[in-house]
Length: 119
Ligand code: AMP
Ligand code: ZN
Image 1 (tube, rainbow, N blue to C red):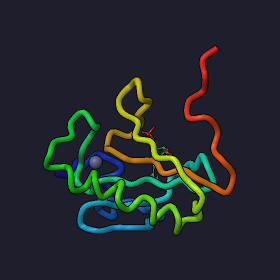
Image 2: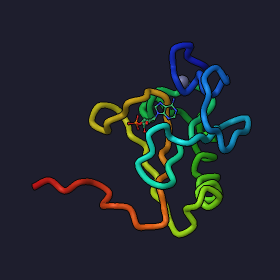
Image 3: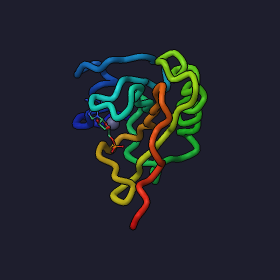
Image 4: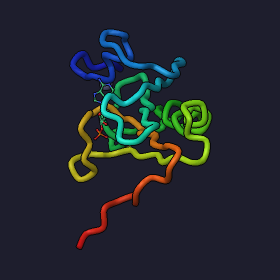
C-alpha cells in the first residue's frame, strides 16, 4: 500500500514537499526536482508499486489514469506541441526511484533522440 521509506510515498503522504500539479484518489503529478527539459513532471500511482514488474490487474486504474491525464497536464504545463513519456524499469532501464513513475518531458523545442545511439 505505502512504503515508509519510499520518497514518492512520502510525497504522496505530504511528508516531503513537491511542486504538485495534479492529484486525485489514484495518481499524483509533480514537477521533477532535476528537470531535463523545460517541461518535466512525474506521474505516479499513489499506492506504492516498486516497478512495472510488480504491476497486477489491480493497478490498472492508476496506471491507466497516468496515461489518460498526461496529455491534459502536459498541455497545461506548456507542452502543447508534443511531449515524451518514459517509464524506466530496473537496472537496465536506469530506474533510480523504486516507485513507478512516468516522466512527461516536453518543451517548446523538439527533444533530442529517444536513446543515445551506440557507436
Ligand atoms: P528514474 O531514473 O526514472 O528512477 O528517475 C527518478 C526521477 O525522480 C529523477 O528524474 C529525479 O530527478 C526525480 N526525483 C527524485 N527525487 C525527487 C523529489 N523529491 N521530487 C521530485 N522529483 C524527484
Ligand atoms: Zn512508494
